[in-house]
Image 1 (cartoon, rainbow, N blue to C red):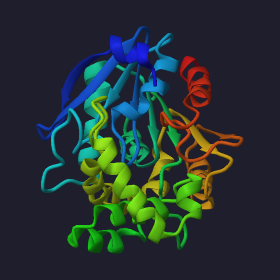
Image 2 (image 1 turned 180 degrees about the vertical axis):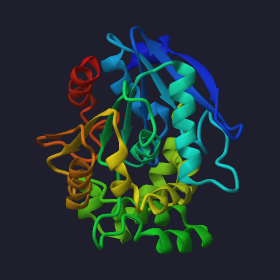
Image 3 (image 1 turned 135 degrees about the vertical axis):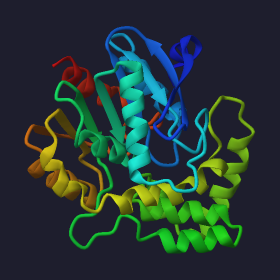
Length: 287
């Protein structure tokens, strides 16, 4: 998982508009690129992607609010705050390139409504509402299971509700998945590898849902985006992700759309095929 990058990376922080501190890992050399992870992830999940880009770019891997090196969300967290975090990262690092996966792409898109034209923005399948589809239909059941003290069940609800492309999530029934997930969470929490434990990430899904709920009008607003935009998706990804990319492609004047065959929603993660995603990003960011 990018062991060489892990050993050479440094850490730093930026301060968002409301005073929230956002921590990041930094390594590589060249023009700056910020890589924003998705839900149930931290900066650690992009170590392989960052390593694949580090020969051409100075890579910044932030922990989004509520996890790892970054401050908590705060009581009044909204999409506006998350977009301000993106702005702080771009301005204070001097980066002109940014990539976001899934929910991590939503605040980037919100920031892109007013960002300078010289930036290059790559988005991988933001879970935006299109038509009658709700990307957060899982939220009510998740809240009940969290209130009952059943984080393993809540994790399964999120994984199934967000169209996780892992075969195990798709094929196995909840009665099998819940004990498996609970066992896996306990084992992962004991690993001293710098990865944020899943048990700490499960509660962040409330705020991830808030990002989606706040993004209801984001596709129609995207007609104002003037930066160069690359819309990436996987050939194996669920239909709602493809529909959202199609709507964004129609809305953003300068958008390019690329589908990566045989890849799924989490291709950029350490457990996916991040080197293939990096190939597309490298070409796009070099212009």
